[in-house]
Image (cartoon, rainbow, N blue to C red; front, side, top):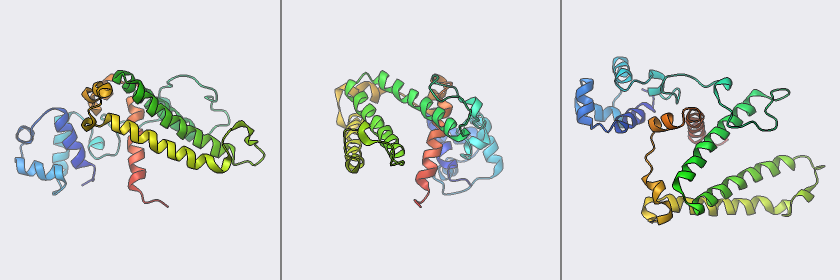
Length: 230
Protein backbone atom coordinates (compact mmCIF):
# COMPACT_ATOMS: atom_id res chain seq x y z
CA UNK A 1 0.00 0.00 0.00
CA UNK A 2 1.11 3.58 -0.64
CA UNK A 3 3.16 4.95 2.25
CA UNK A 4 0.96 8.06 2.44
CA UNK A 5 -2.21 6.05 3.02
CA UNK A 6 -1.74 5.47 6.80
CA UNK A 7 -1.02 9.14 7.43
CA UNK A 8 -3.97 10.36 5.35
CA UNK A 9 -6.62 8.08 6.83
CA UNK A 10 -5.41 9.04 10.32
CA UNK A 11 -5.60 12.73 9.39
CA UNK A 12 -9.13 12.37 7.99
CA UNK A 13 -10.37 10.57 11.09
CA UNK A 14 -8.90 13.18 13.42
CA UNK A 15 -10.30 16.04 11.33
CA UNK A 16 -13.76 14.57 11.91
CA UNK A 17 -13.00 14.15 15.64
CA UNK A 18 -13.74 10.44 15.37
CA UNK A 19 -12.30 7.82 17.65
CA UNK A 20 -10.79 4.68 16.15
CA UNK A 21 -13.63 2.75 17.79
CA UNK A 22 -16.30 4.82 16.02
CA UNK A 23 -14.54 4.90 12.62
CA UNK A 24 -13.80 1.18 12.64
CA UNK A 25 -17.42 0.38 13.51
CA UNK A 26 -18.66 2.57 10.66
CA UNK A 27 -16.19 0.97 8.25
CA UNK A 28 -17.11 -2.54 9.35
CA UNK A 29 -13.71 -3.63 10.66
CA UNK A 30 -12.19 -4.14 14.09
CA UNK A 31 -10.52 -1.28 15.94
CA UNK A 32 -7.29 -3.29 16.06
CA UNK A 33 -7.28 -3.69 12.28
CA UNK A 34 -7.90 0.03 11.72
CA UNK A 35 -5.06 0.79 14.12
CA UNK A 36 -2.77 -1.44 12.06
CA UNK A 37 -3.83 0.33 8.86
CA UNK A 38 -3.21 3.75 10.38
CA UNK A 39 0.22 2.71 11.63
CA UNK A 40 1.14 1.10 8.33
CA UNK A 41 1.65 -2.29 9.98
CA UNK A 42 -0.77 -4.02 7.62
CA UNK A 43 -1.88 -3.33 4.08
CA UNK A 44 -5.53 -3.16 3.15
CA UNK A 45 -7.28 -4.29 -0.01
CA UNK A 46 -8.78 -2.16 -2.73
CA UNK A 47 -12.28 -2.69 -1.37
CA UNK A 48 -11.29 -0.97 1.89
CA UNK A 49 -9.74 1.95 0.00
CA UNK A 50 -13.03 2.42 -1.84
CA UNK A 51 -14.98 2.17 1.42
CA UNK A 52 -12.78 4.81 3.07
CA UNK A 53 -13.11 7.01 -0.01
CA UNK A 54 -16.89 6.98 0.31
CA UNK A 55 -16.81 7.32 4.10
CA UNK A 56 -14.71 10.50 4.09
CA UNK A 57 -15.99 11.73 0.72
CA UNK A 58 -12.54 11.99 -0.85
CA UNK A 59 -11.00 10.45 -3.96
CA UNK A 60 -8.87 7.31 -3.95
CA UNK A 61 -6.03 9.30 -5.52
CA UNK A 62 -6.12 11.63 -2.51
CA UNK A 63 -6.05 8.68 -0.10
CA UNK A 64 -3.00 7.29 -1.88
CA UNK A 65 -1.17 10.61 -1.87
CA UNK A 66 -1.22 10.91 -5.65
CA UNK A 67 -2.84 14.34 -5.47
CA UNK A 68 -3.29 16.84 -2.62
CA UNK A 69 -6.80 17.59 -3.92
CA UNK A 70 -9.57 15.80 -2.06
CA UNK A 71 -11.61 15.61 -5.26
CA UNK A 72 -8.76 13.87 -7.07
CA UNK A 73 -8.26 16.77 -9.48
CA UNK A 74 -4.76 17.56 -10.69
CA UNK A 75 -3.54 21.13 -10.81
CA UNK A 76 -3.03 22.77 -14.19
CA UNK A 77 -1.65 26.22 -14.96
CA UNK A 78 -5.07 27.70 -15.76
CA UNK A 79 -6.49 26.34 -12.49
CA UNK A 80 -4.12 28.46 -10.41
CA UNK A 81 -5.55 31.89 -9.58
CA UNK A 82 -3.36 34.97 -9.87
CA UNK A 83 -3.06 36.56 -6.45
CA UNK A 84 -2.34 39.81 -8.27
CA UNK A 85 -0.89 40.72 -11.62
CA UNK A 86 2.84 41.41 -11.55
CA UNK A 87 5.40 42.37 -14.21
CA UNK A 88 6.39 39.45 -16.42
CA UNK A 89 3.10 37.59 -16.11
CA UNK A 90 2.64 37.36 -19.87
CA UNK A 91 3.56 34.00 -21.33
CA UNK A 92 5.54 35.31 -24.31
CA UNK A 93 9.07 34.00 -24.18
CA UNK A 94 8.56 32.48 -20.74
CA UNK A 95 8.57 28.80 -19.86
CA UNK A 96 5.36 27.44 -18.33
CA UNK A 97 7.03 25.81 -15.31
CA UNK A 98 8.51 29.02 -13.82
CA UNK A 99 5.18 30.82 -14.22
CA UNK A 100 3.27 27.94 -12.65
CA UNK A 101 5.70 27.75 -9.73
CA UNK A 102 5.46 31.51 -9.24
CA UNK A 103 1.69 31.34 -9.01
CA UNK A 104 1.89 28.45 -6.53
CA UNK A 105 4.37 30.40 -4.37
CA UNK A 106 2.35 33.63 -4.50
CA UNK A 107 -0.88 31.88 -3.51
CA UNK A 108 0.84 29.92 -0.73
CA UNK A 109 2.40 33.10 0.64
CA UNK A 110 -1.03 34.74 0.61
CA UNK A 111 -2.23 32.02 3.01
CA UNK A 112 0.89 32.37 5.19
CA UNK A 113 0.52 36.14 5.52
CA UNK A 114 -3.18 35.82 6.25
CA UNK A 115 -2.28 33.44 9.08
CA UNK A 116 0.21 36.03 10.33
CA UNK A 117 -2.46 38.73 10.17
CA UNK A 118 -4.77 36.54 12.26
CA UNK A 119 -1.97 35.97 14.77
CA UNK A 120 -1.78 39.74 15.36
CA UNK A 121 1.90 39.61 16.33
CA UNK A 122 4.15 42.30 14.86
CA UNK A 123 7.28 40.47 15.99
CA UNK A 124 6.27 37.17 14.44
CA UNK A 125 5.29 38.88 11.19
CA UNK A 126 8.61 40.76 11.11
CA UNK A 127 10.68 37.62 11.67
CA UNK A 128 8.84 35.57 9.04
CA UNK A 129 9.01 38.48 6.57
CA UNK A 130 12.73 39.01 7.17
CA UNK A 131 13.38 35.29 6.66
CA UNK A 132 11.48 35.22 3.35
CA UNK A 133 12.98 38.49 2.10
CA UNK A 134 16.49 37.20 2.77
CA UNK A 135 15.67 34.01 0.86
CA UNK A 136 14.52 36.04 -2.15
CA UNK A 137 17.54 38.35 -1.85
CA UNK A 138 19.83 35.33 -1.81
CA UNK A 139 18.29 33.81 -4.93
CA UNK A 140 18.13 37.10 -6.81
CA UNK A 141 21.73 38.03 -6.09
CA UNK A 142 22.98 34.58 -7.05
CA UNK A 143 21.18 34.76 -10.40
CA UNK A 144 22.23 38.38 -10.95
CA UNK A 145 25.86 37.57 -10.21
CA UNK A 146 26.00 34.66 -12.65
CA UNK A 147 27.01 37.17 -15.32
CA UNK A 148 30.27 38.86 -14.26
CA UNK A 149 29.34 41.88 -16.38
CA UNK A 150 26.50 42.72 -13.98
CA UNK A 151 27.94 45.33 -11.63
CA UNK A 152 27.92 44.61 -7.93
CA UNK A 153 27.49 48.31 -7.11
CA UNK A 154 23.76 47.60 -6.63
CA UNK A 155 24.67 45.88 -3.36
CA UNK A 156 26.37 47.24 -0.25
CA UNK A 157 27.62 43.86 1.02
CA UNK A 158 30.68 42.31 -0.58
CA UNK A 159 29.94 39.45 -3.00
CA UNK A 160 32.22 37.11 -1.05
CA UNK A 161 30.29 37.73 2.17
CA UNK A 162 26.59 37.99 1.33
CA UNK A 163 25.89 34.25 1.16
CA UNK A 164 27.27 33.48 4.61
CA UNK A 165 25.78 36.60 6.16
CA UNK A 166 22.30 36.03 4.76
CA UNK A 167 22.35 32.33 5.70
CA UNK A 168 23.25 33.19 9.29
CA UNK A 169 20.47 35.77 9.60
CA UNK A 170 17.95 33.45 7.99
CA UNK A 171 18.86 30.88 10.63
CA UNK A 172 18.41 33.53 13.33
CA UNK A 173 14.96 34.63 12.13
CA UNK A 174 13.90 31.02 11.61
CA UNK A 175 14.88 30.19 15.19
CA UNK A 176 12.94 33.20 16.48
CA UNK A 177 9.64 32.59 14.68
CA UNK A 178 9.74 28.90 15.52
CA UNK A 179 10.19 29.83 19.17
CA UNK A 180 7.25 32.25 19.09
CA UNK A 181 5.03 29.65 17.43
CA UNK A 182 6.00 26.89 19.87
CA UNK A 183 3.20 26.15 22.32
CA UNK A 184 5.77 25.53 25.04
CA UNK A 185 7.22 29.04 24.78
CA UNK A 186 4.06 30.66 26.23
CA UNK A 187 4.75 33.91 24.37
CA UNK A 188 1.64 36.01 24.93
CA UNK A 189 1.91 37.90 21.64
CA UNK A 190 1.40 34.71 19.61
CA UNK A 191 -1.37 33.15 21.70
CA UNK A 192 -3.88 33.76 18.89
CA UNK A 193 -1.73 31.74 16.48
CA UNK A 194 -1.56 28.79 18.85
CA UNK A 195 -5.33 28.91 19.30
CA UNK A 196 -5.97 28.94 15.53
CA UNK A 197 -7.61 25.76 14.32
CA UNK A 198 -6.29 24.69 10.92
CA UNK A 199 -6.78 21.46 8.99
CA UNK A 200 -6.69 20.66 5.29
CA UNK A 201 -10.48 20.69 5.30
CA UNK A 202 -10.69 24.09 7.01
CA UNK A 203 -8.00 25.54 4.76
CA UNK A 204 -9.89 24.33 1.69
CA UNK A 205 -13.01 26.12 2.90
CA UNK A 206 -11.37 29.36 4.03
CA UNK A 207 -8.96 29.65 1.11
CA UNK A 208 -10.97 28.18 -1.72
CA UNK A 209 -8.67 29.57 -4.43
CA UNK A 210 -5.25 29.55 -2.75
CA UNK A 211 -5.40 26.28 -0.81
CA UNK A 212 -4.83 24.14 -3.91
CA UNK A 213 -1.52 25.90 -4.50
CA UNK A 214 -0.53 25.46 -0.86
CA UNK A 215 -1.31 21.73 -0.85
CA UNK A 216 0.66 21.23 -4.05
CA UNK A 217 3.58 23.16 -2.57
CA UNK A 218 3.53 20.92 0.51
CA UNK A 219 3.44 17.77 -1.62
CA UNK A 220 6.28 19.03 -3.82
CA UNK A 221 8.43 20.11 -0.86
CA UNK A 222 8.03 16.80 0.95
CA UNK A 223 8.82 14.85 -2.21
CA UNK A 224 12.14 16.73 -2.32
CA UNK A 225 12.84 16.15 1.36
CA UNK A 226 12.33 12.43 0.87
CA UNK A 227 14.77 12.40 -2.07
CA UNK A 228 18.44 11.93 -1.33
CA UNK A 229 20.49 15.01 -2.32
CA UNK A 230 22.46 14.58 -5.51
